[in-house]
Length: 372
Image 1 (cartoon, one colour):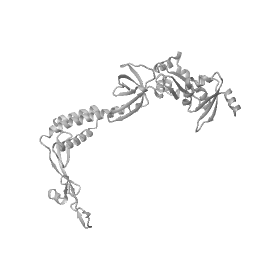
Image 2 (cartoon, one colour):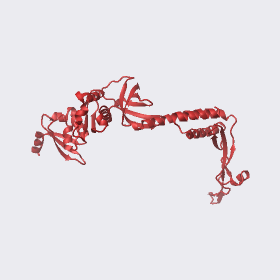
Image 3 (cartoon, helix red, strand yellow):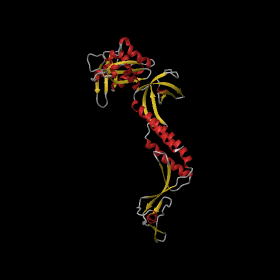
Image 4 (cartoon, one colour):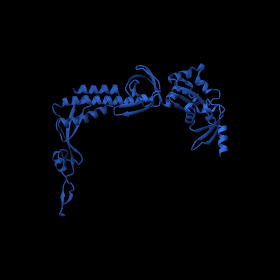
């Protein structure tokens, strides 16, 4: 590769990939130092300079000037005799000041004496090295660019295409990058087809030596939260606020919403006219049911709301600080509704409100009181 061709190649990459020009040249110079020492069996200090305008490459060997007076190292032999041993000078890397001034008058300790040692056939080595360095820098720049593009998308919802699968994962084409969607992070029971579009929640984005790792999920609570924000403009603009989501993927979710405006019905707004808005969300959840819960800053009322579809719930807050315990009292008819099938309703209500909730009927409380 001729000098002007190399410079042109660097300029093109800098413009196309957004790489700092100095980074490319410095990487090239470091790579050429290694290549020179390897190909020409050099043990000396070496540096390489590439002319940023012409692309001309020059190799220099150099010696570092050291003080001509070096303190001896005290050595004690087995018999206790003391001698002084001067440390050896690395003749491949150093030169004593007393010798250096013979070559360059007025030179000082710490300065260097340089000699150009550019081999005649170094262009061949340089061409091969340049290709490797430029390829590496392109890959690094693309990885950096992708990480920067996706850095602010963590915890967000994206639409991709199912590109391939293996035993444990699906791989989702997200444009410039491919996300990993573990099969364990799919909604239980859902069936997907390769080549179809799919909504995924980006739960983790991380730079790795092999490129960006984008871990996706459809089971994460954030998936339901972002679905609501996507389908309901009032959530996106802040007219309605989403307080929390509790979820048992594939079974049921409880979503707590509220509004600071008394004129707005947050639950009705989320349901939409004739249930159109909530229907769109449910269609994405593979039959998972969704309970819309009205959030209330009063913990007792919020817990009562969260235990829906149970009605006429009376809540007694036992501890609202450390243990966060509450007792919900219901009648016999509402007890199964409050607990739910396999305890799912009370489990989700506890997660949603962040209270450990116990549910009892008045009869149960009276019986316990009589036993005591």
